[in-house]
Length: 321
Image 1: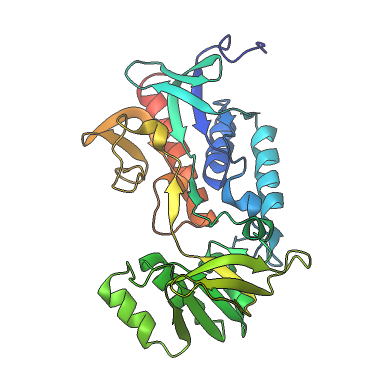
Image 2: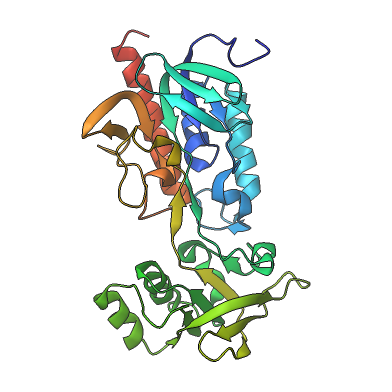
């Protein structure tokens, strides 16, 4: 094997990202003898790498730890010949074929590219919050709502995402307190009305989270809050805190190169085809959370990774490669 990626021959496929979408694409591509190169990126394993128990991924009746699920996928991909490398995308040229991908000092040439770099949850970036991610602090109500059964919890945010999370969590939690840092909510009127009308949702506006309590116990015990108007601080006893302040798609490198929506998600045509000015870009595909602002589940990411790999196979066959 060449010492550097630059010295490597032209690849059939390079996959950007090593979460569920990227690794599923790698498994399918490797089983088709395409010898995929997977670049792990700045968040190896994606959001599952900071998730504890995953109970909604098919095939694991007793659940599985998120990092273990990712590690199993990596082993499965490498077993069939996928190559995983640490590296960050420093530049890309989609104007010529083969496609040129700049990784540090190395330039990788590839016939096809699968973009599976995901989306990162927006956090408050409090040290206590970061210490308790996966231990009562979550950015995914669908993933972790089941664990809140009969508990009192908090949802942070004032937009539609926060309202949706709060309404969903009322299926399990005894009480949901929705905390917004301003007096005004950004949510659409209909979503706000639904949340206000729900008897198990209470609102705290003009309030910020100063600290998540329970770091020593590795279990959320409450929130230290501050009223922005009066400066008063007080403790809200809750067992979970959910962030409902959105996600940031990891697509900045593709600004001006691919069609993105107003929030920076890749606009994929027919599920996985990328476009520029509405025209499909040959050989460049997107899958997972980088183009999915709606579902954001491990299983949907894996499904779109499968689709992207199958489209890569078809593209290479159609072009005699």
